[in-house]
Each structure stands twice: as structure tokens, then as C-alpha cells.
Amino acid sequence: MITDTLQNLEDDSYRYELRRDIKLDESVTDKGIVLFVMLNPSSAKAIERTNADNDHTIRKCMGFAKRWSYGQLRVVNLFERRGKRPSNLAALEFGELVGSNNEEHVRVTVREATLVVCAWGDPVDAIPNGKERAQQMLGLIKEEGRQPHVIGCLTNNENPRHPSRAAYAKPLRHWNGKGDQE
Image 1 (tube, helix red, strand yellow):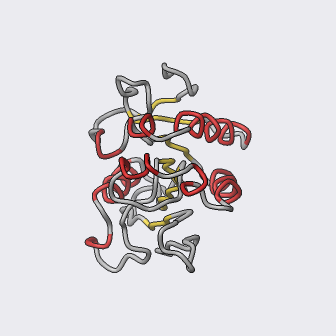
Image 2: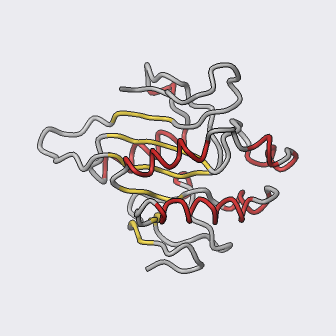
């Protein structure tokens, strides 16, 4: 299953979830689903036919998933509005950033995930209500009984590091949603 099943088919400018299967070595036990919660959907193609259909961020997330032995990658976002540059989101109204069914899609995906990694990075600070939306998402993750994680340490602005800004060697850490990680 390599799909972008929850993309709004009427309007390609929104995506609720991206999924990628990860090819693991036969000797590795599949730990299940790793979910990355990031800022906004990328330009990655809906259906992966070649590696070129994945942008840098998705390739990096796939690399983390494989190193951590997860057979499926899923990505959801604080905001569903697709875009290559998060800075372009700052000019939009909050209602233009969040799709109508995002929260329920995120809830279902969080429930299904084995591991939840928060990874929206510092651009969240430049988006109106970005920090508040991040706190809402953390609350949702915890309501679903999941422990949020981050890759390595937080950024200088105390946001979870974006995968493209994290080395594969960085440890995965529990995060309490505040400026420190456990």
C-alpha cells in the first residue's frame, strides 16, 4: 500500500495523510507504523512509483523508519494545506490552512501508529496560531494514549526538529510537549 489515500480529490491543495511502505530486510522484525506529525504536506507525489516521487523530507522520514525497523511510514500535519515553502502559509487565514476533517483523520492515524514522532520544526512560529495548533495536536496525541517523541534535541526555539534537519544518528526521545525532553 503506497498511497495518499486521504488527499482531498476535489482540491489537490490539501492532503490529510501520506503513507509509504518501507522495505525492511527479512531478518528485521517489523515494529509496525511510525507516524511523523509535521507542519504541512509537501510536494511528494500521491502514489510512489519511483524514489523521485518522494521529496527530500519524505525520503528522510523513510530513512528513519527503516533504521528504526518500522514497515510503514505515515505522515500527518498540523496544517493540511500543501506547499513547498512553509513561509507561504503565514499569509493565509487559519481556516485556509486546516481542512474540514483533519482532526478526525489525525486521531485515527495516531490510534493506529506504534510510534508518534513530532517534527514540525521552527516554521510553526511564523504561522498565525501555529504554536496553539501544535499544542492542540500534542493534546490530541496524548488523549489517544500515545507518547510523543522527537528526534534528538529540540530546536533553539524549543520546537521538535524537522527530519530534514536531523542526522540519522540522533536518538529518538520522549517529549512532554514543553521545552524539554525526557
